Structure formats: C-alpha cells, structure tokens
Image (cartoon, rainbow, N blue to C red; front, side, top):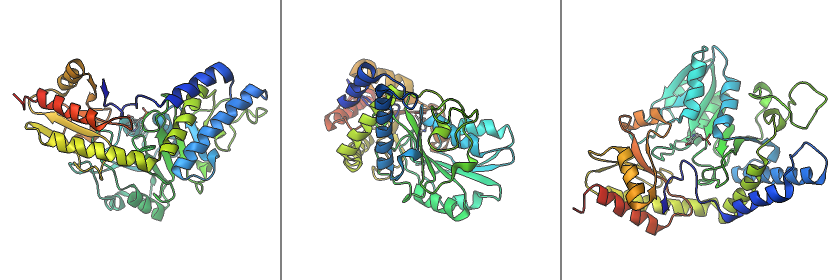
Length: 384
Ligand SMILES: Cc1ncc(COP(=O)(O)O)c(C=O)c1O
C-alpha cells in the first residue's frame, strides 16, 4: 500500500509514538495537573515534555506559551472568536481552509466584516495587497501558511511585517507546515500560530494547539472554553495565566504522550532534513505527472514554493473516480474533491470538481512516487 494522504493526517506514525501512547495507558494513565500523586506528576511531566518540544520547534522560549487543544480548528477558533466582536474587521486570504473561513463567516452574521486578499491561479499572493485592506477597525489578520490544496506557501513573513507595523495581531494557520517546514515565530513576525499534532508533527489525532509569541499579551483574548484546570481551584473564574487560561477540561493526555514522542522524533530527524526529503519527492511528482498527457497539475509546480502536496486532474475524469481507482486498482491512498477548502479551489480555478491530491510524507520513498506516477499514467490512458 502507498499512503499519499499525509495532508489529511500523517501515517504511519513513528514507532516511538505508538510506544509512548501504549506506555502512557499502561503505566501512567492519570490526569496531569489534577492530583499530587506520582502518576499525576508523571502525566504532567509528559505534557510538559510535549510543550517543550513544540516550543523548541517553533522558537518560543517559554514552553508555557504553548497551549494544547484538540486540533488546529479549536486553536484557530480561540483566537478568531476571542478577538473579533461585532463591528470589528478582519483580513484573511483567498487560500484559507474552512477551519478559518467557517468561524469568520459565523462571526460575519454577528456584524464582523471580512476582507479577503485575492490569490492568483497558483494560490500565491502579494503581501502588499494586505496594506490596502487594513482599516481602522481591523482587529486581526489571519493567513494560511501553506494551502492544503496546492501546497502553495504564502508570504507569511511579509504579511506579518505589515501586521506588526500597524499593531494588528497576526494569526497563522500552520496546520500544513508545523513539523515539515522550519518556523520561528519571531523571525516570521507571527504573533500566534495554530498547529495540529496529527499531520507533519506525526502525532496522534486529537492533539493541536496555539504557540503564542513571547511578547504577546493575551489579556484581551478571552478563553472560548472555561472549566477545571487543576489550578486556582478556589476561584470560580477561569485562571488568567498561560496555558491554563485556554486549557479548561481534562486534556487528551494519551494523545499528548504520543505528541511528545513525535515532536522529539521530528526534532531528532531535523525539520530541515524532512523538508529536503519532501522537496525531492514533490519535485519528482510534479515532473512525473507533468509529463503525462491529459493531466493538469495545479499550484506553483515548484517544490521551493510549495509543501509536499501535489494536486492534479485527469481530463474528462472525475476526481473521485480517479481516487477510487487508485485505491482499488493500485492500493494508492489519496484524497479527491474540495479538501474542506472551497475558497482555495475557487482561487485555483478548480471549484467545479476539485482535484486529486497526492501528499507524500517523511516515510514516502522515491519508489512510491514512481509507482504513483505510473498508476496515474495508466488511468489517464497515456500508455494505451
Ligand atoms: C490548512 C489547514 N488548516 C486547518 C486544518 C484543520 O486541522 P484540524 O483538522 O487538525 O483541526 C487543516 C486540516 O486539514 C488544514 O489543512
């Protein structure tokens, strides 16, 4: 079997992740931050280990500025819903995932106004466009780091520069890049970054969170969910310090044990090394698919300007039929359709039927890529 659906969720996970989760369930099991016994202390140490790993990966000096949530969606919602009240204005881009757009559209019905920076046919954009969209009431700029449809990288640093110059909080959706691309919050001018644990961080589903820049004051960002944290239990109101402010409720401790292990794995292997491997595979895919008649490859077509995602269509064939045939005839797993990102498809000109998306990962080999290209060639009838 060849798994090319790493943009949905990465698989297989490194063995250390499976082992850490089994060990946690078998030997620890307790809830972190809640009790003082040794098992609870072990659970807290493991959770802190995960915070330290993510902080190291993203260049955040204080691990307590890493907030854990269930996924990138809940992390994005904390910031989007927390910062935007009726009358506020937000700037976003034409390549966003529904994890950003749906909360924004909900808030729009409550009186928030939205400006969308247009993207070109490759999914890219000129950061300078943002200057014209900012208004006196702009309370947030939110941008995708890389499209989950085309892999296109947005000019995050330059957008962040503009946000910083105007004193507007800048939120980055790094669901597709945390773990597969070097990121440093300070260097990239990012105030808050939302990550997910189950994609390039190679952890389990049910993990994700926010990384908050060391200089950002969260005083004006209320929590979305309030509840028990194990801290300040004498108070009936939510603690106002990080990370407890945004971590009400029992956490996914077994997931965080897996995430702690997966982040160590990523750090040990090296994000630069993973990026170089994925760049090679992406280049090979673009080149191989691009040679096949009746195939259209969507996006930049340049591994430097995109992540390890290559979307394509076969002329005259529906994307879901192609993906089904790839699974049934060639045991190749991929995702067709709109990928929860209709606006991105609209920008890319592929809204009608979507695309077939190949997303290799750190465990994909060049042989896998060659087999995938050969399978598409067969389906396109190019070797008939
Ligand atoms: C660009 C992007 N943003 C956000 C998300 C949401 O991530 P999660 O499902 O982990 O909340 C995804 C997931 O596909 C994504 O690709």
